[in-house]
Image (cartoon, rainbow, N blue to C red):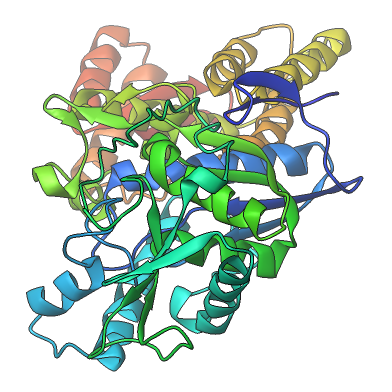
Length: 459
């Protein structure tokens, strides 16, 4: 079955055709490891992981790269302002050295990997660090210099966007004659959208033929993606905030250096809270640890994200997250329950398989895929065994760990209530049995009467 993806580069939903048959090369813009990631940041990686899983579900081999920015990323897309890694050093009382910067980066990278693991996100082929690819950055800047696409001013070397007529094609960004930009004003620039490929810093940085300093944030992604995936690769993803500046800059410098670069560009929308998009700068950043401190499985957040199209904004609320946790537990408990003897309608099985594949292949329509999952679970024409097999198969895409059995210790007082209820049922005292069921449920457990006896699971 064909896969269709919404390509930000063309503005169209297109059939996905990999450059190499049976193989997908994918680059995902990774974090700047200066602090803990909040759950809004992590939406990008659940999206990228779901995309990878869809490719693999269609029997495609995937090489995935997530870069790690540990140098050269300023507080915004602007070429001015405070560097995020420098900000982290000051916050944690560390010296302004490259060694201390690496120490901070390693700490928050380890925390980022823990977050990915908690969300059941598959490990990519490579996690390249920006600081380990200075040579590639210098080579790329040198190539752009030699081709006449850059110029030097007092604080660095800049790319001249006037020499790339297609600048702004990604997302259909309009560039006016004056070169106005939301990223700040610098009177030395030829055009205010011109961007730094190298920033000078005589005290802290890396030696280069054109002066000591740091690579621009954008040049890092171009250099690392091409190194690990080649001059042309299939898919590049990131958040919608990367479209106007970061990703258009990547395209401009890469293409002008002679690399065709990415064929399909996909972008996830924001996770919103009542005050707007979730962001550290606004003080509304919730981490996975916040969820776990509330005894919420992080995979419940993954479930919540799947209830919306990746390209649609999603409103976060604790009520919605609790609902996702309840749904996740019900699916897991279903896969753990005893099988029944219902005969299967094999035509319905094939129909569910076909529809699920059609939904996820249609630009990752996970809301429809989840709705289908619940229709299938409630379908009396299928045996529970077949439903479970389908659930585990669908979970190759959903990534919800549906074969994970909830292991919650039942307290002694609840065990006593269960025993008393069983005695009441044996004596056909169903009024007492119902009263005890309600009492058991007040302790957070769900009671089911099965052929194998009473099944009590966490709610």
